[in-house]
Length: 126
Image (cartoon, rainbow, N blue to C red; front, side, top):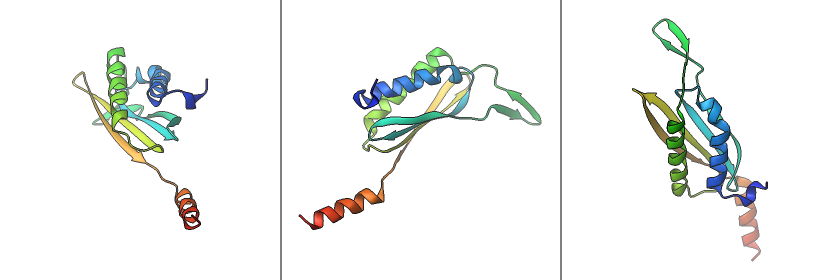
């Protein structure tokens, strides 16, 4: 399968499918998706594996249910409509609060100075 031929939305669905098992054990964290030329490269989850309350530390017992994960995937797909760049990172923060999934999205665009300089050099000769 050649990723460049898949729409970004389909690539995002594949990434969330790959993260399904890990998300099933987490109640909070950040899913990150790194994009270059509208192709997902690296993706994963940043999270704290142990939670603390007062002086007590404990591991998370259960994480996101299948319906929570489906909701998060839908939100991620909807957020793609707001993306205006081809290189960058999207972060989907999530946390369970009173058995309800809370999410937020952060976009980070990346630009390469070398490609800007190359364009300006080429325009001088036109």
